Amino acid sequence: MDTDLLSMRWRDGVFAHWRADPAVVARHLPDSVEVATHDGDAWLGIVAFVMEDIRPRGSPVGRSFPEVNLRTYVTRDGTSGVYFFSLDADDRLSVSIARSLYALPYYRARMHVDRDDDHLRLRSERDHAGEPRARLDLSYERVDGEASVPEADSLSAFLTENYRFFTRGTHLYRGDIAHEPWRLAPADATVHEESLFRAAGFEPPSGDPLVHIAAPLDVTAGTLTRVE
Image 1 (cartoon, rainbow, N blue to C red):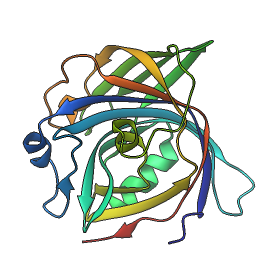
Image 2 (image 1 turned 60 degrees about the vertical axis):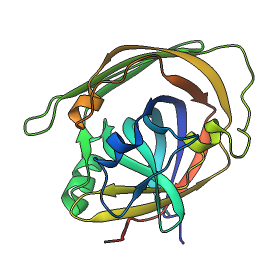
Image 3 (image 1 turned 90 degrees about the vertical axis):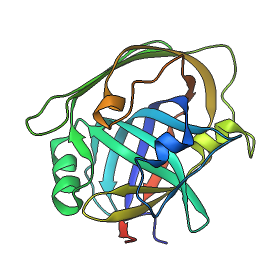
């Protein structure tokens, strides 16, 4: 599988996850993928980062912009991966390409990422005509503990160490990425405002999320492949 058609660097990454009922999540998935669980729980996650210097192979010029996705974890034909319910990006061209070629659930949003030492705040607002409106206002900061690679079979690895993704547009598509293992650190987060869940058909999350922040990471990605 060619996974170096695009190269980029992901920085200021945060994973915020909430436990979910597998049956509830399954109702929002295509029949051809199954909910993946860890100790009996499904998980819904808001993942945000800045995609820095993203460029096609051989291009001398890259683009940089924040992205936020709402996701869960699935299996298909024995292979695990991420399933995206929505992807918001502050880049008109990238969103236009994804929506026009594949009808993917990519949305244009105004985003700002502010940093003050180890404290970050991300604001995202999607309010374009014809799209489900959604906002996210999330503050996060590192707590005590060094960044490290999660242990295999741990919950942290289940939530982050995924190198294949699925999403539905005009068809179900699969994509693959490649990178070194995530280096994660525990973090605290405050969700000031969140409506991505409701925009995707879920009830708003309850309780505090499980939060990790991630060290910057170089990533390569391939093209999307139609799987059904």
